[in-house]
Figure (cartoon, rainbow, N blue to C red):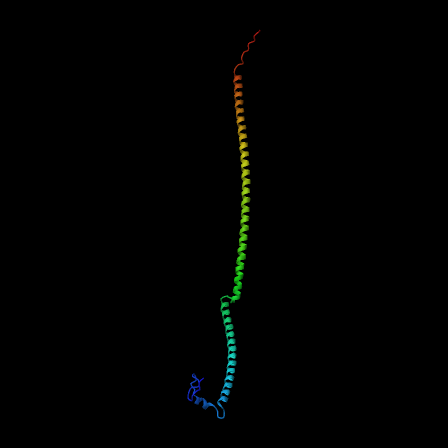
Length: 190
């Protein structure tokens, strides 16, 4: 680094001249002593700044926590006013997971119930079909028996009618014969 000339700024940003800096060094001290003292002052000030920043950071962190707590309380109070409850993201994930598993479980139960109902309906339909077939067969048997009895009765009635007609004819023939004089018989000697 080239040597600095008198009157030239020490640092570009500070725009301080060497005379200004020399005038600030106390009498009896060398520039190196002054720089050493300044360095120590700068270190102490840096430490104080770091401590202050850490303390400020802690206080800011506490204030942020307090604000968040107050915000949460205010939000909770507002939600409670409308019968709502604040829920954190983890709880929402858990509730959604529970909802999915419940929906899957309900779908399985619904499918099982539908299967059971279908089986019961099919069994009832089959039972009704068998019951109908039984009653139909019973009705057909009664119809066949009725037709057979009807045929028998018809035949009996017809036979009785013929019998009555033949009895009428016989009675008529007898009445006719009784109304006529008996035939004369000739006795012949042979």
